[in-house]
Amino acid sequence: MGNRRRAARSRTKPAVIGGVVAVVVGGAGFAAYSMYSGDAAGEDSTADGAAKTLKARPVTAAEVRATADGFLTAWQRGDAANAAAFTDQAAAARAALSGYRKDAHIDEVTLTRGKASGPKVTFRVSATVSYKGKSKPLSYDSALTVVRAEDGKPLVGWQPSVVHPDLKEDDTLVTGEAGDPPIKALDRNGAELTTAKYPSLGTVLDGLREKYGRKAGGTAGVELRVVRGDSAKKREKGTEESEDQPPGKTLLTLSKGIPGTLRTTLSATAQAAAEHEVGERERASVVVMKPSTGEILAAANSSHGFNTALQGSLAPGSAMKIVSASMLLEKDLASIDKQHPCPKYASYGGWKFQNVEKFEIKNGTFRSSFAASCNTAFITQADKLDVDDLTKQAQQVFGLGLNNWSTGVSSFDGAVPVQSNAQMAASLIGQGGVRMNPLNVASIISTAKTGIFRQPYLVSPNVDDRTLATAQRKLEASAQTQLHELLSYTATSGSAAEAMAGLGSDIGGKTGSAEVDGQKKPNGWFTAWRGDLAAAAVVQQGGRGGKSAGPLVAAVLRAGG
View 1 (cartoon, rainbow, N blue to C red):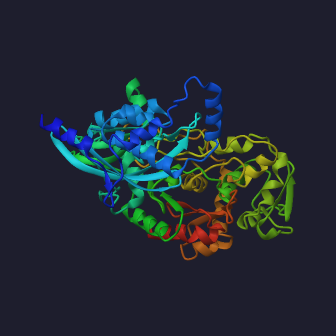
View 2: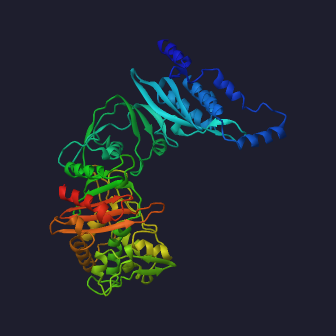
View 3: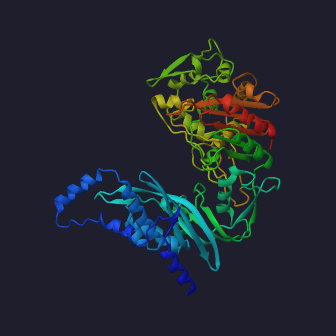
């Protein structure tokens, strides 16, 4: 009885902002809806014309206010059906708002409307989450947008994010025993890894919890959590979630579970250095790994939302020339100290390609062309290649683009699609349809250093008996020897030399920049090894890779792992 009385009070309590009632309960809000509910039954032609005329008009401030108030009032009262009637997707809205109370166990809801900005209205949610005798307050900000429907009515444009900003299509809010027990993630030496100390690891730790929470031996707590749509569908079918499924998100912890312990390949030393370096730059991402094993030592991003370091899909620019060069070497279309063309311009498939600042190397070798990152040295060989040669090289030798990496968390293993004409030529220099992230590029230079692709991983396959991806073949010995020498020379005497200065003798590197439509400056790429450490970084809109991403990579290699 006590709970029912309390809920009744919450349904009649108006939301207040600045001393003014922001959501009028049961009165003006619902009356406003009736004004646009089609009272002209029997007057079809007039009504149709009026609707078309009205639909063409932008919603007015009064309509925005009345529609928002009606929707928020009904939601606050727990009347999902009436709240949904104020939206342009009534069925979806009703399901979400019903689940808000039933599945998420959110009650005592107060919705406080903020100021409108055109058709958009912000509001504050204050509520209580209760589950099996445990309860905690919940508060967050959200927003809605009022649109005009086909019949001219002003309605809330329904999006799951109206209910909570972290919700996407088919996601749900659920309160209960957490499906995934918490984990205590450790680095390779036993140091604990937390988002408080390493902010870039937020999505990584969420993913580890979702994949290994049960395997690590922990006990689930009670949480309010976003359950991703694909995850829910897979659970309904009783199938396993794929590794590239984005993790859910905990919004509120009512009681903590007992964490299990999971050791990773990460290095607290390398991660700290990576976090520091990306923190000094805008839109930078970096990965550090061990070429001899494939172990990932660090992954960091300037932004702590999307994990570009492991999941990004960007044109890698001249960093791709490592793969292209290995192909030319294997096909005897280039040899390290043989003369090789590097003109100012080269055309293929109707496109005219040029080098940075239109430089040329007269009577130069492939060594000098590679070290200077000459674009035309690769474009001039396009007419000697089949359209799928680069794709085969990337897949068969470097393990890229087969969608079979199993790193332990969500990751993207690159894309090198078969292309023709100008796009095929552009792919040779990391443009066209080629897409990579720092993890992929760090793997590329690791393969170039050792001659063998070793799939990068962040959790040992021994933890869950998963199988790591392998490449179909090794890089041919002669080509690998020459490629190793090319990268070493580039790091000591070529475009990577300035950034790599002082890092010793066992080094190799490659610069890169990638043009992006709509950007004034290209993305800067840099990848290098030092001993048994390899790293790759991208600075979006950073310009030349040697200047923007080079110092970042050099710093993390210097810090070690």
